[in-house]
Length: 103
Image (cartoon, rainbow, N blue to C red):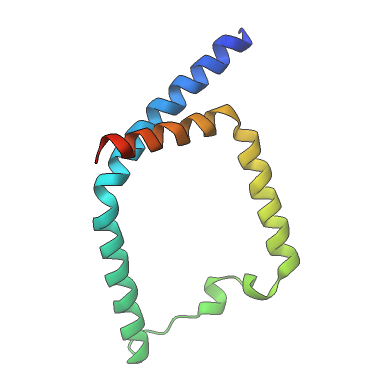
């Protein structure tokens, strides 16, 4: 397959998918944000009343105190994002266009 055709296909797919995600995100973000806030407040209230016990250390898998592991994971994530290349950029562009169009 020709490299120009491959890049064009990736750009087209990325912009189209990003556009759809941007529109949906803009419409649903306020509702989802409110649901998450209520859920977090409810969990913290239940934990304060000793109805629910959350092991926060186990939930974070001890990552709070392990700098080297966190840096290594961040580097790995950065490498993965760089490898996405043109598709990731066009997806972000489509997402921003979708958010602008849905206002």
